Length: 49
Image (cartoon, rainbow, N blue to C red; front, side):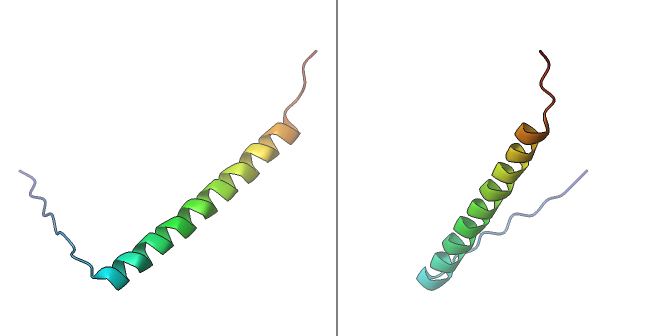
């Protein structure tokens, strides 16, 4: 039997703003890196005629 625990956090307004800002930065970084990877794939794809 596996037991898991769930802990709820109750941030104040300042902490919530910091977490939302951090998540936004991470989202932008992920999308930028994904765009770079897709660009590289498009540039290195072999065109078959």
